Image (cartoon, rainbow, N blue to C red; front, side, top):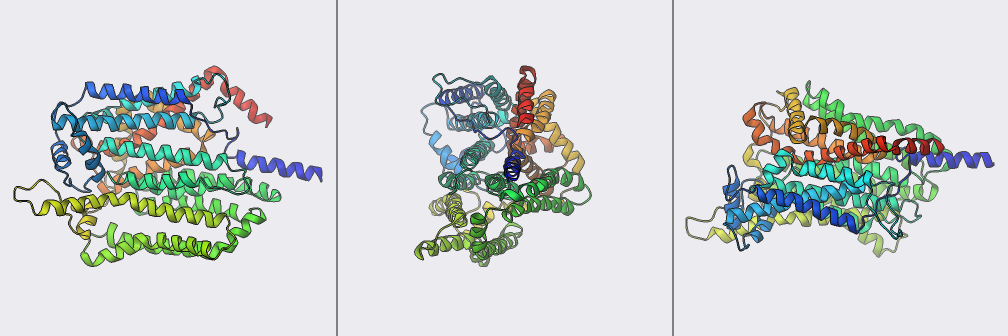
Length: 561
């Protein structure tokens, strides 16, 4: 009997250790972390100010500055958040309007560096945190040196620096992405840190904050969309697997551990899709879908092995969960057909589009209200659906910033000519949706999106080398492999996020492989450069561990466990 219990305990431990071989102790930010983050921000900001464009620059700077100052709408998708925040900087007491807007850009670019540092400290500091109770909190060389080096490498990466010194939207975009991923790390840590509780809280407040920040990230540019899609394709099911890993029946842990090989299907799907896409774009996307299904099947297997109290809670709510899934498929299908993939959105389609947007949130909100009014005994599924309901409403609420363009278009409509610039005349919802979804650009590339595939992939690699140098890019490759050992879920998610963005730009834009096209397409990849800086940080940490002996100590600890 004792041997059976010992075997069950060992298997129970090994299941979570498949994800975290050295355990899971999140890094707690301390006062000096915020001081260092501010110093990193300051170094980047001063560097940008010293090289700031003195007034309006080339490209879209003139248009963006003009519409921002006049509170109009720029070219699609309109960049409403960029205009609202930027207007505040026009009230500075020095420089012309163009210079003030450039200061705004520099501020957001430096803010992205600040969040990169904090995110790196959190991820690199796993199992290395100095106890808060310690009388002398101290910086850790294996955490803070890699975080500082990688943050500054990104701060002065060529294209991020270039965008930071002129009136453009991409610095705000990467700032919003950096804030979203930092909040995601914060959310993830709270979930896993409380995994041993019988009654799971599901990081209620941080979940709602994350939903809002996700919506907010799309109010400057649509590029963060693919990071959000990657979150729901792989991060969400894998996080729940980690959360419930220690809530499985002891006798079934061994069987569960053997299914862990499915993880490699999830991890390899982005690589395979990139190779297959040279033959068929649809087949490449199918491999990505297969990887996402593998991630959800991975969690599905776990659900079938949960302890009785958790399994029964899910089984009792299964019809309602399946109903939500069906409604989600319907709403996505309607939105894709009537909005995203349509050449233009017409007035008669607006009702269907609004229906598709609010269908799932309305169902989840109604479900939560009924559960509370009927006084049903709540369970963890009810909690998740409540969070998803309120979270989806907060996501939509953040997106309502786009209504700013409708309000301003109506305010400017009656002014005498020449009117202040307001692109698109977004006085009606169908025009607003057309503006938001960039219909002026004609949808997907007419050539099919894979004509120059290998050249475009090589192009992306060249972008990375131009930003960080060949040595740092190689360190980043090693860092990704090291991250797989220490943070499998995060490494998998970030790989998926980068791949989806890259594939979307190749498939829908299909840029030609020439110097002129490269010069204005590279900015689309800056948020991927931000992510690659995380891999570089892990590469630096691996080198420090190797030379300090930390690697050997970690291996010895794993063998001992």
